[in-house]
Image (cartoon, rainbow, N blue to C red; front, side, top):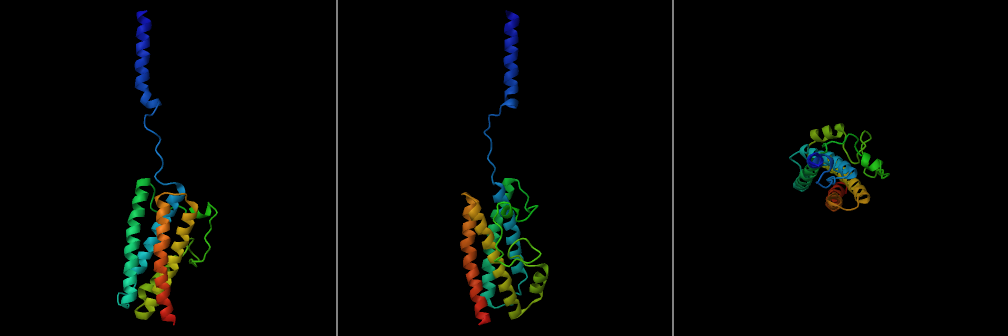
Amino acid sequence: MSAVAGLAVLLMAMGMALRPVLISDEPTRQPVLNATEIGFVQDMVTHHSQALMLVQRLDPGVEPSVATLADQIADSQRTELGMLLGWLRLAGAPVTAPHPMAWMQQSGAHPHRAAAASPDSAMPGMATTAELDQLAAARGPQAEALFLRLMQRHHYGGIEMAAAADALLTGGEVERTARGMLTEQGREAGLLDLLLARRSG
């Protein structure tokens, strides 16, 4: 009897020792972001980064209305960029997507190309390296017109991406942010349109 009792105690002790290995007391953690959210955030990091690049390459001697709008765009894009990078860090995801725009293609939400993306880029609204170099070299009215055209195209590309994310996602902070981008970038795109119309007029 004593041997049986001792064996029972031993088995109980072994079971208690192995329990944390076999059975986790912690609930299964939900991912911070799903695959679509990660893809959208990664691509929007790339998109926002180029918006800042456009502002950096703008001639500082342009007229005040263009310079003021450029500064406003840089401020809003920089703020959103910090938030996007923070989400990727929390999710443990890389900053750059291995396959840009795959989140749209895999879901069947192909870009409309209304934003006239450059032919060597799968991301709508992005400027080519040659266009960036051209902007950096431009001065005065030429720089103003080129900047406004590139940033207009860039914003419509961002709007296209945000609209696709809003359509694909079903709630959460990333979707709310995408809707906020639609409003903010739509407002800025309207100002870009107005400044361009004044010049063409």
